[in-house]
Image (tube, rainbow, N blue to C red; front, side):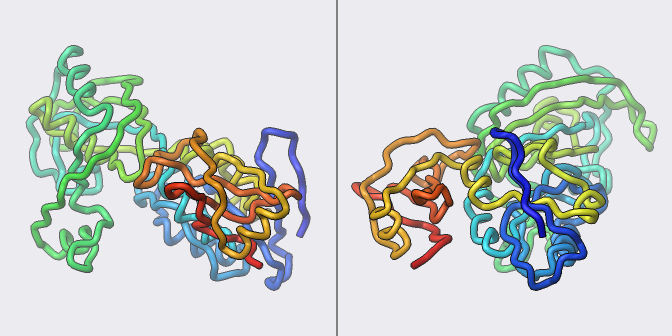
Length: 330
């Protein structure tokens, strides 16, 4: 196992050779450019083999059809993932206007072909504007949301009718990059639009395509999706599974924490207190990094010991800062 430092401002990586012994302890974040056709669980299983540990998890799934940024944690860093799930995300996507499907994407059966040979600019712009900002979104019925203990997609595949409740999400950006006319497989004249979407965690891009088509009265679904960012991690940080198979690139926990959250530098006395799970004086408001905040609208804060290592995540609760995750306990 070898450790390398890159120039300041870039991701610091720990490179672990496949030949490294399985006993070698590797902690950190791995950013994978997921290929199409792979489930998130498939990627986790591959990285478990590469890292030689069962302790690998992800910070939010991608559908098998989708490609792009999948953030994984290894060993101690798996505890960190809970606080990365809430990060903002960004996607490029292709939406087909003129057809609806049962899954709101190209993998589902077509349920309506109304056609959309012509989509007027003003109508498209108005519909997109209505789907930008804080909106109420009904997730796709084939999402992984649990309904009475079972995944929604499992109920749909079993032939059940599933009606999920709407929930608030934030669409920060919804821009059309390109548009073109096309002919669907059944001969329907449709319009395909390439878009970029930046949004809060929990936003379904398939549902945006569905709702855009519904607003235009023609139906819509997703035909391609690529996640380009999760919080501060972008496709430039991601390696393919082939890249990681040659050498597993791991972002150490301290570097990841510095990139993901505001930083609070602790005194030696404060570091000791945090290691014992004790409260501190409140941190106060600090800008988050691509993180929409918890129930109180605040980002966790990365607490650094005097030697610069992250030892905990803190959250202000009233008049004190409480450790919500202690990575280096006493």
